[in-house]
Length: 497
Image 1 (cartoon, helix red, strand yellow):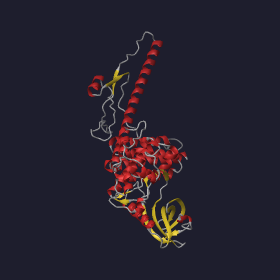
Image 2 (image 1 turned 135 degrees about the vertical axis):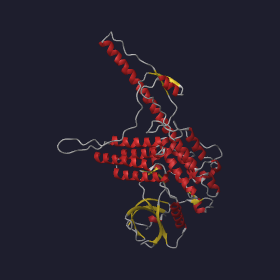
Image 3 (image 1 turned 90 degrees about the vertical axis):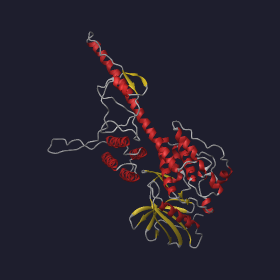
Image 4 (image 1 turned 30 degrees about the horizontal axis):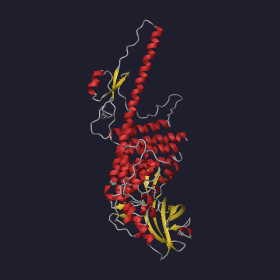
């Protein structure tokens, strides 16, 4: 019987004369998680509480103490933060062990998959990369999570967070039976059934299951119980997710994480780097496609315009010869690097924008001599100066008249456009890492779609900018530009409401 259902903790109870329990938000196994109020620091926190009879079995208290120590040892913005640990005798005469953590609002990844099915591969890759980075940081500190599941990944307004280090252990540790019996069977690596010592490879296996589930909506293997898991045969090659549009390297990475032999699995750091590279390549390819579509559109507009002029001249003045159409050869140039200052980018930058635009007045021969890419076709185009980057939003000048002035705040579309342009510009010069830009773009999109609590949402994004700058994912200058963009979005949201 769950002790929390038999006269355990109740709303209004105060632990150690400091933490007042407000509302139970989750329960399972031997513990429950409460929303609580820290009366010393005047903040809302989450408290995981395990209570039982005084003098009873201390095994559960040892586990929750291990969880607190392991989580406190790991410092990462995408891992749950631990504030405090303690043990106390409650007003009902029961002994309670508790761990105080940061309260996170969000939705479990398992709920998202169950209700909406598979995730788009890019979103799945962003989530998996973030979880992999948390695991890499934990493994560097000798901590193995051992329970990486979709249930323990929380989708918050700041992005995905890895929770519940309740059965974490240290690398090389020989776990006792209490820890060996805990876990979620579909995510349990085969070697855990043989009582092998703790190794980071078990987390990588679970990460492979997580990636497979996000991409396909189901687990790679059908076993859901410990008995079925012990009888399962994992000697064959691991399954590969078959998803339209999924890059081959991501599919192969998922399969390698599921390798039966732990030695054949990549490290969590390698998983994070491979997923980030795949996302970066996808973004670059998307920009190249957008450039191609834009050029085709311009060619079509030029052709239609020329045909219209010709028809008009022939109808108005039959004796006037029509304009002479010049066929301009359109090439797809090799990617070149572009900097805002000079229009050229030194080679070797991470982000190659595949676009070369000739200056006005440049001859076709000059373009073809400087463009080694193969000929794609003949289209009718008009010469134009290079595209300039989006201008920053400016508050319109004060309107004159009436002895006063009035300024107009940007619309929500304009404000978001400014923020997105800042992300693209930062990516192009390397001041914003590609995975960070994609993550920020997604959380702002989520904020604008929900509009439930924009003030709280913007505050969460500001904290995310702090975290990403500390990680080195963006420069201080890029962070300042993004802060200005968020301020415009906030002003537009206030105007809209």
